[in-house]
Image 1 (cartoon, rainbow, N blue to C red):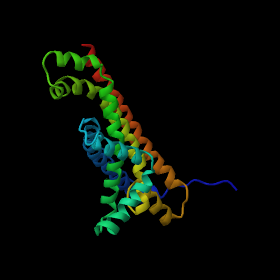
Image 2 (cartoon, rainbow, N blue to C red):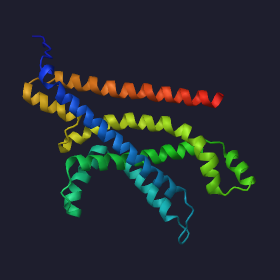
Image 3 (cartoon, one colour):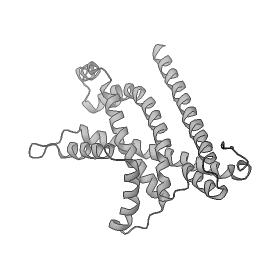
Length: 228
């Protein structure tokens, strides 16, 4: 017997999906924002040339953090933040807060590498030219290198936002009522195993496709401004 699709539940449960999508976007936007700030700090720690006993401790700490975060699943990081906050810090952290912290910490590791790649993509001759004009390294970075690097970094940050939108679905494992969790709610209420998943897939596609188109538009505008 063939399966008969039935989406009549949407009339009653569409607001549930809408609320889930809204929370997914909120989690993602906050996480990318905090991730960008923390990622900038990580990049700075990797870049400073402070040596103690012949080693660079800040560089080692930042590099280790980035490698550990990038080498472990986000779902594990979310669960460790959620359970570890109570176990080791005595904090009864809300699931939503734990999810935002975990996703932000995860995003920071990737943003740090995005910033590094963006800055390294700028011609090294730019720094040499700035230094020859009497600028300090800090002045050269602030006035010459970073403004050019931003044009390389922004599109990649947009791609990171798309990735975070999809990966934030893992917050459902700790009960955060985001988009993926809304499918679980509707499946339990309607006893329909597949249709709610199709609706969620459509929401994710609309969000990521729209953001991707927006970032491509911004990237084209930035390239056009360079040609003027």
